[in-house]
Image (cartoon, rainbow, N blue to C red; front, top):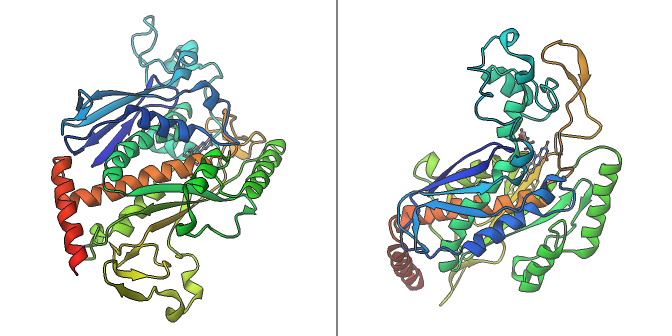
Length: 405
Ligand SMILES: Cc1cc2nc3c(=O)[nH]c(=O)nc-3n(C[C@H](O)[C@H](O)[C@H](O)COP(=O)(O)O)c2cc1C
């Protein structure tokens, strides 16, 4: 499967199109809506999340609850649009035939949004680059699409992928292991991640499996709020039950690690992606890094360690996939940073926009979606794209083959 999204942060809808989604999949709408709700949570989110109650409306590609193999398209309504109808109007008011490219010709009332035109780009956001690249005259046009509100559509697309992964007993989970300076000192062993641990992560307002650390993370976020500042952090996404043999070393663009890294790097504010112990690797010798190979009848080949994060040579090796991601602090801050007014060229403070102070917990849910899409698209490459039963049959045969080697 591949997907595209469209829609502005305060436009009417966020939209998604999934292409090559197999036919015959029973779509659980409650599951999709629950995934959207998980993305909306997290201590440190802005007021916007209390306005939105994201739910998906499927527009095409599903009939009587089952996917048909046609492109799946869906919308997620922006409730806040009601408050932004004028600012986000697709066409100018009837009194104005069309906007002139020349700002001087434009009637002043049409140039003004409720807050006036936005002219002070935020360092760390897309504002200045988008304004330059697209020759815009209001940073609002950049903000609306570069906003991470778009990730709602990614989570919905990831939900569609997860529905198929569940049928293959592949599970994708995530948790937060750092917010600002507060670090979860020891990641839980994957074998120790029980249903209780998962419950703890879902209950935690920062998606951290340790209650004490969760509390410290919340305090760190409170301090940032008090200081008019913002925070980033780290999160991990883990997939268990992934078979060996997804991806390939035979071409650079078929490596599954490359695919995963691209998907994770595309999450707004993610600045580094780690596979397994990738960040530790430079300081460890080969004898102490690589995961030794063992064999047991019935189990087949296996490892006692998983520093490779489940991928060697661009191919999954049958161990859990472990992906870490570092998120920079949110660019919008209550205090603001020094910037330059794009019209007057004078030094001013950056624009204020309603904003999250910390969005690492939400980003970890987006990470789950990205990893699910990477895995499903690799599964489809190997086991078929068209129909879910075809995929399940081919997968079963492959599992039988694995049992024999
Ligand atoms: C779930 C999520 C929520 C975010 N919320 C905000 C926000 O409220 N305010 C903000 O300035 N940035 C927010 N960001 C980060 C920006 O979208 C991101 O920094 C910006 O698009 C620039 O892209 P870059 O940081 O990848 O260069 C959020 C990111 C994610 C993943």
